[in-house]
Image (tube, rainbow, N blue to C red; front, side):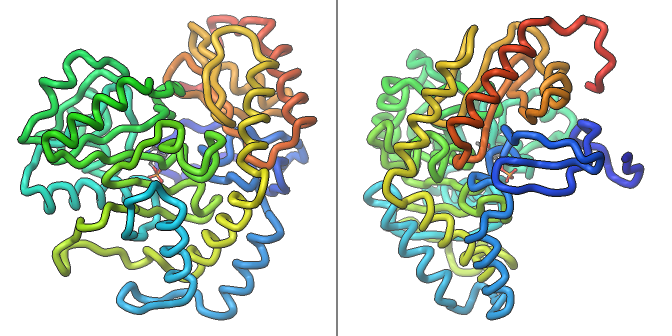
Length: 382
Ligand SMILES: *Cc1c(COP(=O)(O)O)cnc(C)c1O
């Protein structure tokens, strides 16, 4: 099936998905796939999870929308739980609908509350597609295309401590970092880099904004990747996994940070459907053994793979040293839907509920597919 009406911003895979169940997806030809994409890491509980289906149906019948200026029980409960689960010291929540919106909220809050304008972010980082988030995402070509981007954004090398001190001074409002660069190729941060960056932020009154849009809610084997580093940011940005496929985002911020009244908001942010789903997601991912299991399954997955393998938890990547995109079609033909990250990295983001047997199946497919190199004159798009 083709769709001539869609603005083609993604580069199509040529597959029409019609149904999902747990870790399985089906296309309109009846082909079955193991899902190692989770919709870019969002669908952490796979597809049609019975608890999510129930809560959505039930909440839709009860109260589906409510303006942000009103309380509702699911929102109050969710915010209280997010604060309880987030690193100690984070005390307040703003709810939105996507990762990029969580970054926008963080950038606005940082500028408003420090009175400074400079934003420092990392090369190879990814924070989203809206203007602020795109401006904090390294990409001279994209920036030129949409110029002028949001001004006063500076980029540092990721995982390099040299240069940090020069970049982080009293003019900087916020340092924005991922703890594992996801789209940039699955590169975990080194503890020394994060420690030094956090220390410089404290010294200069810079707000440390940690983007856990991809890593949050169990992807790395901890509820938040911050826990691997013993880190409390000033602003924690989350989205993807929080809604397990339902559009949702949030910032969780240190006590004392405030938006001036009327300076920010979102029509759909914190709607009852999203909050009810997120409460159910939290029930599941915080249940005993769930996160330990993610960690163990991630290690098992990596143990099945050869070559330059990276990752943490169920964020798994193989550095190919050649273009990765042509391999995705091979994987699809072999019944596995995977992702790339950057040009030369294959990335696997399975739902966190994927079983060991399914991981073994994926491992088998990866070995088979990578045995034969793709011929250079591949006709696939992009
Ligand atoms: C996906 C992603 C975003 C953007 O999220 P959207 O919901 O697509 O706007 C931001 N930061 C990181 C680290 C991401 O992986």
